[in-house]
Length: 199
Image 1 (cartoon, helix red, strand yellow):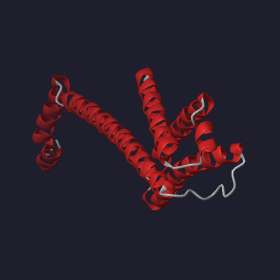
Image 2 (tube, helix red, strand yellow):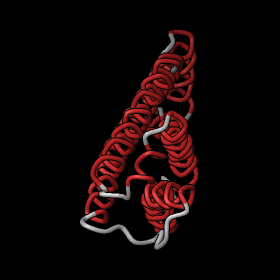
Image 3 (cartoon, one colour):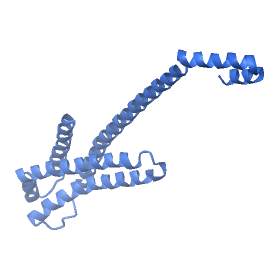
Image 4 (cartoon, helix red, strand yellow):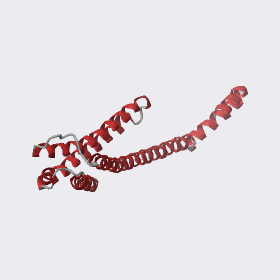
């Protein structure tokens, strides 16, 4: 479990570094904005923001699996929440660029000239693929765990049924039943036939 936390942290930090490098280098921002984006604080902020959003997504995914995985009528809520999470990833990238422009005091903070939007969308799509693969992997692991638990419960059920069958065939029970059958054969043969059928 601790290794998963470390691996997830590395994955989200890697996503943050990837986004940082692409957005800072290829968005064709004014030089003042690029200087702010190249600072150590902006780099740490990118990594921290991606880790917070990534771990929040994992927590949300676990909560959704527990709440709605078996309830077929409310599965639309899962889709709605995942769409909201994808939009949050996009807004994170977009807002980081806007914050850089605001810190410099640049005009037209919502406009990214010369292909800046293409880079922003490319980064977002790569993030969605990686996070989607991570969430599907966790979902498959959860399904396998549930199947193993179901197999163990089935095994316990079979063991209990076998023990109950053994108790019914226990020699003392069989001896008493045969004595009752012998007594019924002597005194009431029709009851003996019914007893034998039920035995």
